[in-house]
Image 1 (cartoon, rainbow, N blue to C red):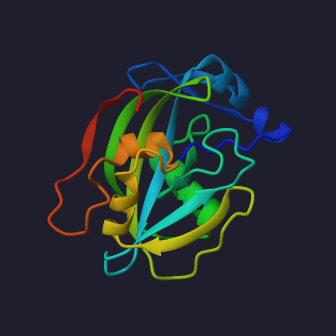
Image 2 (image 1 turned 60 degrees about the vertical axis):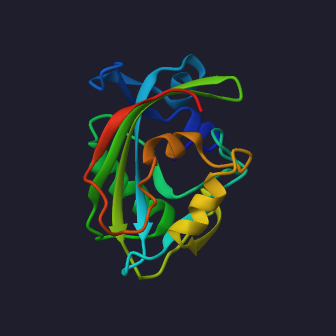
Image 3 (image 1 turned 45 degrees about the vertical axis):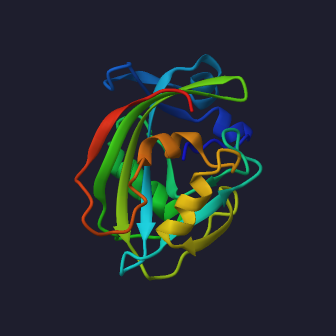
Length: 194
């Protein structure tokens, strides 16, 4: 979920920095946030079909600095300074999938203290969901491919620890990919390394 194309512009992009309790404490260049393992925040959207029976899954581009080539089911990215998680989720949904005007419902949040390829990644993660049957337009620099799966298809893949799936999204969503019926409300918590 954590957007991080490995380009000069993105490396110098300024993002919001948080303390371990989730309070904003300033800002820093994205490259510094990743290199030093600073706490930051990320928000993403789980896109369900209008009838709730399918989920949109995508493969992240191979040029991403974080989780390159991994699969994900959230369109999302890091919070800009002064931005709320819901604002970031809506912005990222529009940028990555071309979806605008969708109603976002909060479904989970977790503080994730993880590692990936030698990087310490510490992030407050926020997940929302929406229902959508309209067109999806990929941002090519972010998404290599995308498709609809049933929750069962995604869960089958998630049970395989070798399947390359964004570990922050795996920690955040837990059982939230289950079919869109009789699910409990928003979940909160903390998660460590996968």
